[in-house]
Image (cartoon, rainbow, N blue to C red; front, side):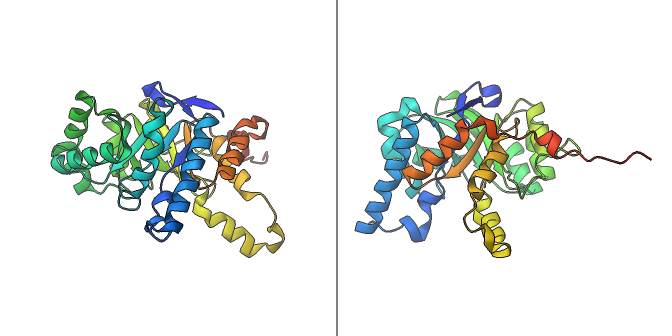
Length: 288
């Protein structure tokens, strides 16, 4: 496993993160019958294997299965907390609800401190930004940090927006988790250097990607359009693309099986696959 530094946090993070969203998919983990228990154990085995291989960044949220993701991952975290850099989220923006959300997450994750607490948002319209910055949301985050219940502040975003840029410009947040992959590159433009990833890096923020593997969309599109690609390793291509971006610190991937963990770890370690994205995106104009 290869490592990077998560912006100004100084944390040494595995460049691949263990994503907890799939753990809480309702039709996959919502039952606690024998099938559900088997699936939970499989994911627990996958996380233990990830930690064995040196993957140390774990990302989850209360909304993943109404707490199921945090509960399942918490069984491993409780036994191996010193090996984890733990990130979770809150969908609450007002102070009282933020405090309640964090207390519940601490209980489910079986820990005393969250390394990165993130506002769980998408585009941050004006009213959300107002609540966060001027009605106590950010202050609640800062108070939790002062109390030692969280270490660093972050937010997630699905796409660039004026609200996202406002949050970055405050200089108050340490980490941004953003949708970025081969299909969705608008957050980080190499052709005309710009985008919110560049804005965040200028503030010293750490960059974490979500939907790193396009949530399976690219794979389905390519195989539907080109049946001859049925055996192509598109997952490796997509992961290597994101890992080739030197501005990315952690690429989050949902993993349910130890075999998936081992494959992704091998992609991380095969640095010879890395691409020069600036060169790839260069436009060559013919001489007049």
